[in-house]
Image (cartoon, rainbow, N blue to C red; front, side):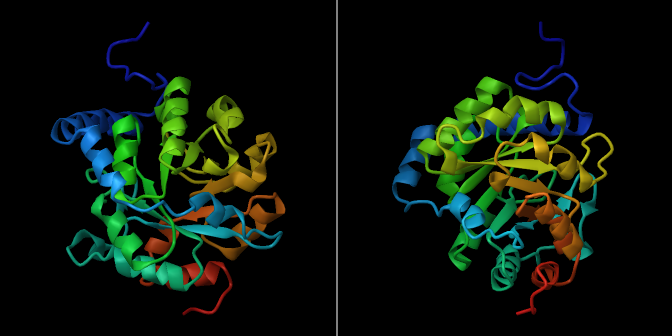
Amino acid sequence: MMTPGMIPGMNPDTPDTLREIIEHKRREVDKAKARTSIDALKDRISELGRPRNFFQAVVRHQTKTDTAIIAEIKRKSPSAGWIRPEYEGNAFDPVAIARRYHANGAAAISCLTDERFFAGNPAYIHAIRDAVPLPVLRKDFIIDEWQVYESRALGADAILLIAECLNESELLDLMILARDLQLTALIEVHDMDNLLRVRHHIGFPMRSYSLLGINNRDLRTMTTDLAHTLRLVDLVEDPSVLVSESGISEPEHLERLCTAGVRIALIGESFMRTEDPGAALAKILKRDVK
């Protein structure tokens, strides 16, 4: 039986911060659905070309010593606040950051679009895609099929699905819809229980449309620990589709991941804290800055 205040699809042990975000997201989506129908989104999608292949971009070029970096554009977060003071103003330029990432070796781009908690904007997706040839992940709290259609209509090539926010049937339904819309789904887990719950779904309904992300951030303490991925990697059947997220800031971190067989990393905050995120990307890849 559902207890008062429990959100459908969400574990009763979900941390308060995530619960608050999802409660707000449900209200936000309900309002958006009243303004724009799925049929209207389908009409927009019909005018677009095929999405870029996000899965292939981060998996196909891997070697034993090379890491594909999904470089993230992120202004703020509930735990960190504004990542740099200047990001609070109108001068924030996600396109310029995307260009610097592209020039310095990113395999793909991740972009926060949640407005209330992360100061993102859905319009960033199209603007970034127009500026660089890399595939773009829409990083938001996807809890409804309407948002999957919206993501495709915005020009996204991939979406994030957070296991802690979805029950099994919801997750599978959204994965199927993402595949139907030719979007890659990055299935993110934060703890062992959720990894065990979703790991056998990675590759459904087709292998080349889903990735598994292990987020190294503890949702209760908001601290990060790279060792979290290293502790869980042996539970992952196919490490070639595994993405390590959060708490990665040094070349040595990538080397530790590679040694464990993890060759995809999503990195945002450590890049975005610097004056030149593209230069920070080049540094972690041990490349000359362009």
